[in-house]
Length: 166
Image (cartoon, rainbow, N blue to C red; front, top):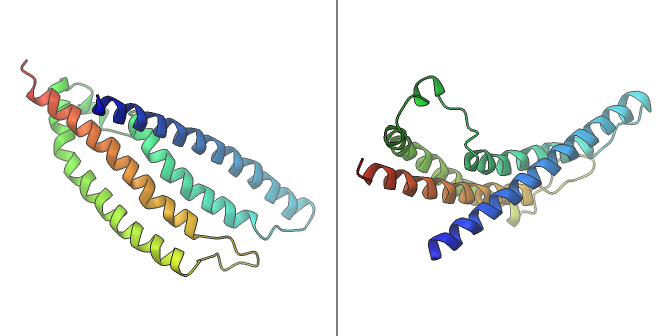
């Protein structure tokens, strides 16, 4: 029961993250074109669009990673992997998950330290129009934690496949 509630909640969070990523892509496209128009047609460069697009791209990477992982959209060596049985795929996933856990652990640990320091100093971009950086840095460990939850969920499913008798 608790596992099902956790799984459904995690799936909903990931779908919302995908929606946020979609909106951020539209934001980047619209304001990227606007910035080019302002800069080259009106000869009046924007002071804040470039920095906000960079922040949006960081957020796209944060929300896109979890969404892609949930939907199996990461690149794999399908040349070999596609021909494996479900059990062999699960074994490969469990073996490589060690690296994933290590990467996400470091990302959460160091990302949290960086976010806390950024919040402490109310970090902003060093531009004419200061755009706050601390919300973006805070999103990185949060997104990494959500991806960790997806990886743990997949890890448990892979263990079940490995243990299951053929």
